[in-house]
Amino acid sequence: MSVGTHTSYGVPVWFIHLISGGFAGCISKTIISPLDRVKILFQTKHPKYEVVNLGVVGTLRKIVQNEGPFKLWRGNTATLARIFPYASIQFMSYEKYKKVILGDAEGGSPHPLLHLICGSMAGATAVICTYPLDLMRARMASQVDENIYRNILHGLQEQLKKEGIKGWYRGSSATLQGILPYAGVNFSVYETLKYYAPKNEKGQLDTPWKLLCGGIAGPIGQTVSYPWDVVRRRQQTWGFATGTTEIKTWGVYRIMHQIIQTEGVIGLYRGLSINYYKATPTVAITFTSYELIKAFLTF
Image (cartoon, rainbow, N blue to C red):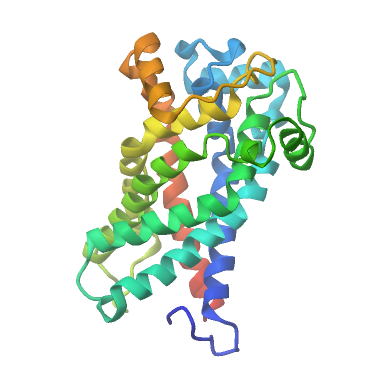
């Protein structure tokens, strides 16, 4: 069915896309939350976890030793509060943009470029609507011993007092520039691989193939967009790794230039190896969960 129609029991299909996307995002984020926290600590170069030689497993072990096992999911509440509306809006928007741009061509031969455009637009739409929650997630995940922000609401209030509404969108420029290739490539690669993947006797794609298509799409999208992700985290968490209230207003490309000067080009890819561990299951689980939940709700 397409967006704008209803299911057999009268529920608008756009609402099915909304709910399916939200739950799919929450499922995948909860599963990979410990890896996401390791990635943020590496990206922001927190003094306690700056030794990259620890590796992923070593850093996870050190977090458990220093902070306890439940702190592997530190910031996950903020993540879920953000990811449900983000994934909901992204998938619903993608289905809508796909219907408008592809029209009757949807379901026919693959259109990688058009799917890339639809995915990019959907990602940008979701970012604009939910960015302040992502900012709070990064701030809370980068806290270690200190508790500058008690919860999401407290963080939003404090940020509003210090910097005003614009403070809620610190790092949003890098996020938008990064989400265009990331979401676009993810959707484009996934849709294209789905088209060519072998189908079962009912002409449908089995779950293992959906997982494989998503697992391939994830690392490709991450590699293309990762430097913007590093810049975004630096902008979002400046001062938090050291417990100061330092505020910088550098632009995206000035930060990239500064990172290259002080850390080399490799600095733009700090934590990328962790992201490969994370991106593969994240995108695979998200896309597969979305399709399974959507199919269940429209049954």
